[in-house]
Image (cartoon, rainbow, N blue to C red; front, side, top):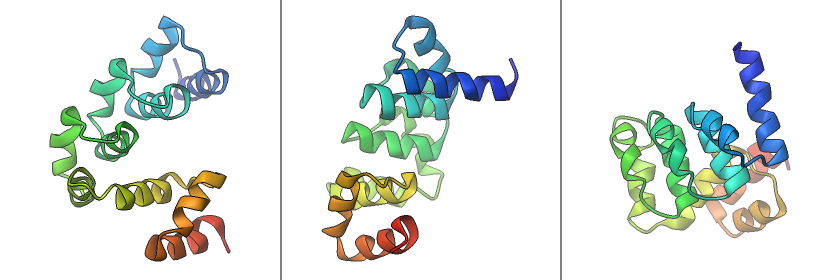
Length: 134
């Protein structure tokens, strides 16, 4: 399969919220697909895709935020990345900062994201300037 076909298939699975075993297996094959499936379709844990997610520091960190806690499989990968400090702050209990960082990275423009970010003085300003464009 070509990469273009794989990208289109992954987008189709996410858009249609396909939860068939074949789709779950395909989405578990790459870190980005597995993370996107957990985030957009399942809105939580995607056990089949955790091994793939654990190979990428960014997706491991963001997946921990989706899980609202530690992601042990990805901790080694995260520890050797620039996300280590953010991950440690997040698991130590600073969930607001972790969520703010998550919304900045994912460029989330939903009404819920805007409401959350307005409540944070530092990240709220950055969010309005760089993500929303106000």
